[in-house]
Image: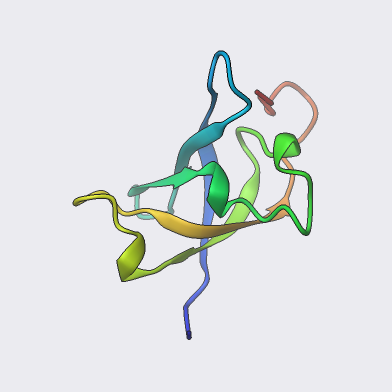
Length: 91
């Protein structure tokens, strides 16, 4: 399937309180927020537990991944980690 990579920054990163499940939102340059779940994180390139707030990512949007009317990322790839000067918030 052909897709266009989109650029964004993880603006919210959440971890389930009792389970090791993660989700969050990616902010695009146009201000739109894109939801993602743990299954979208690229675990082949980097362990999913090292993603965090402020990380620069690329993501894919496919029509079949929509959650109702909410845009949802199907795949998320880490491009660059946020600086370690407190900008990064790992769950």
